[in-house]
Length: 331
Image (cartoon, rainbow, N blue to C red; front, side, top):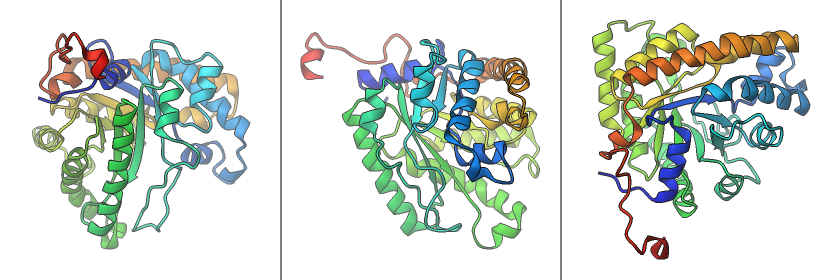
């Protein structure tokens, strides 16, 4: 059984629904969003346009999610400042810079300059999130990245803020030209990554679906793979969407939740088509109808199959922490 501090419990409650299930919508995209808006010249998409898209996403979808994930540059403060983030919806804020350094086969996550866990806490967010490109088999790089994650985890402990980590695998060597080979390797990569990263004092793992449904279709085998992922993770985990199409993501969420996931954290699978619509009115209409309906459907799947986050930690909803008479003096 894991002992959680009061601040972390409160943050986890804020990003989950009342049943302890995470139904989170990601909108912290930067580089990929620019490319959706202007495929030819993404660098020409200006600040105002990016903010406008974030406001549209948040005002159309946030009420249907237990929490939203926003970036500090274009989204988090802007959605609060414009009053489009409901007070009943949790807020996760990303801490990494967009993209990566170090090259395609040696990806180094960089922290966003001028941004910190302290500021995420001060702005009233419920949790901090870090995306990290991670290959457990690149041992020297993996070690550096784990040290960085540990440092941020300690900051989150200091400020009593939940810490969510999103590790992404990527192809190296021959895998670059052979998607089936990478898909086969990824099964073990995802499991080993979960073991490595949840050995650190993090709170939620945002995991890749551990199989590629183009090559592996048997549901029993897929649920079993997700159960292995559940065993590998010492903390509650959610499945990410990685931009797959919506119907495929629904299948992944159902299988992952049957295998022990505590919900989903999906972004582009829910809303990406809207970003290719140039007309503002049409775009917002798509988000508030199709986008909202997609989130509702994912919520139903997660509510039916997912494991509440506290159950994964061996707790029950009425005894999340022991509080003594003098807890406030010791806190």
